[in-house]
Image (cartoon, rainbow, N blue to C red):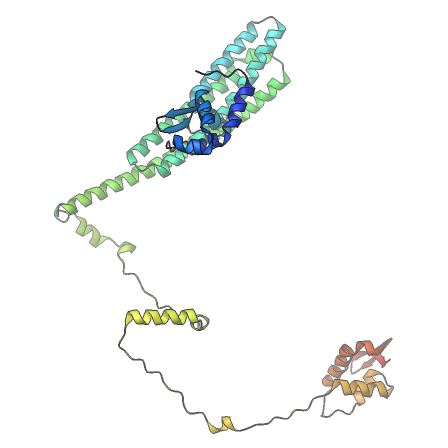
Length: 395
């Protein structure tokens, strides 16, 4: 078995095979990555070097990552599906041992070393506990959604429920260690960092308990659904068996059950006429579709299109309408030559048709709007018929 002599040598080997390792890790669940595919991606000599160093394992025609390295990658990337409660149990055992060593040691330097080990174990316990719960929830969801065999699905969910109980027991054990079993240690080791780690661990344990409650509810719900579906499938198999044996009506009450059932599936499906909008009917694509459907139907009924009546002769006679309008340009020219202010001019202008006071006001406003640049506005105002007008002169 090859042994790496330094971390640098290991990192160099991983860097050399990073592309192949990434490909194998992405297909780690298929177990069908061939050696021929590997040497197309990486030089054959480098592939052999990775195999000799134990990073890759060759099984006949197939190639895969070493189990130890694969576990490391999954744990670092948080994609590990295995719930490892024994790891928490091992850390708790080491934690208790290091606490005993700390209390029994008189040398200050060695006490500090044991205290450092205790801190590391406390950190790992909380992180591993939360990670196991996340993995547990993911596995429960995957088992419920992807496992096709109902019996295996129920067994997997029951096994995951047992893992939940194991994690719950380890949480209780950790909480007991923090609160009761090792009070002497936590009272003796007055270390600020240790207190912060302990407080953080208690918070993680509390969060883990709440997550386990939700996990328990999810498992119960999934098990109930699976068992119900399993019973339904079993009944369907029995019905199919009786039907294949032509004994369904004689050995069951299916006829009576169907007669008494008012399920919506047995109701006649209503068909509602669909009226297309005028905008859709005017499109060429719709016309082509109607023609194609008409060819399929091949109806022999000839539709008679009603003819419209004859167009009256009055529609063909020429008609002429004459209208009188006020030319604003001519009116402006007369105003420029008048020397009066605009309101005086508008009220006394000789219009080509009779106009009301409201129409005069409209002419007043239109002249100002159209020829504002050619008028001179003053600060004076004139009131006429309860309406205030600005005094405007031509320039």
